[in-house]
Amino acid sequence: MNELDPLHYPVRRHGMDHDRYAWSMLSTRKPVHWPGGKTLALWVNVGMQFFPMNPQKKPLSVAGNMTMPYPDLRHYSLRDYGNRVGIQRLLKAFDRYGVKPTFAFNTRLAERTPALLRQVLERGDEISCHSWSMDTAHAGGLDPAAEAELVKRSIGGLRTLTKREIRGWISPGKLQSAATPELIKTEGIDWCGDWVNDDMPYSFRTDHGPLWAMPLSTELEDRFVLMDNLHSAQSWAEQVSDACDLLLKEAATEGGRILSLSLHPWVLGQPHRIKYLEQAMEYITAQPQVWSAHASTILDAFTAQQ
Picture 1 (cartoon, rainbow, N blue to C red):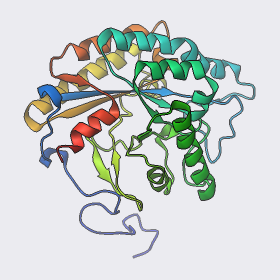
Picture 2 (cartoon, one colour):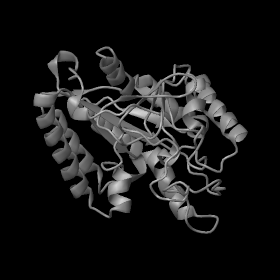
Picture 3 (tube, helix red, strand yellow):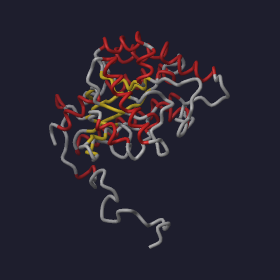
Picture 4 (cartoon, rainbow, N blue to C red):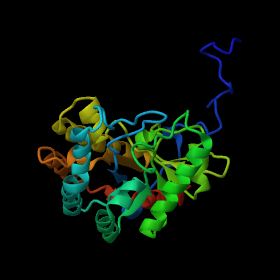
């Protein structure tokens, strides 16, 4: 068969055509039960991001980055608004509805904003690594040695700044090179939120041992829904509520599910949008079968049953 043929794969066989994870249908897996008899785990991921004003965009530009000629003050200051103002509105909403968020920090932001980092640390919420900045894309074309240094600097630096164990990783834009899973596993990462092909965690193979792939939905991400799909914030809240309803219905007969929400302070932290986040949080947390927890806590509850 010609190697350029669209049906030619390096590994042609039943199931997956790679060795990263095993073939598995969600409907046939062992049912999972969350603590306290709950059926739906709520994972709220907050992207704590630093967008440089003069991004190098190597090997490519991550969605949400600067788009105008330098200095792109309009977009830079909008992102900065999220870390100065919008985040406080999100925190108030989480506390009001008893939501336990996980904060995915760019290490450069943690370094630049010690007061913000301290505020998150004092809350006791989980912190995961979001690479160095939103200008450090992990993708094909990135020099392997340079990526290894970047991963080590990002994870090690965040551990130093937080004085905490950092168990999770989310790449900017959820992009990965072929080596990214190996590199983050080498640095002691337990789970990664870059792959969006499931509703539940699954084991992801690397040359240095297994990772857990955590299901962080792009379809319900605030930036994706509002900026890419051009839907209203009200529509976003309706979609989140609809997802909650369906996952609760599935969980009632098929075992526990996870509702994952990826949020950005510069998007939903705006004064004209925050009420829709509050509406979504109010609706979800009013459901008696919902359990809000940090990402690693959800993963630990899951793996204990495997």
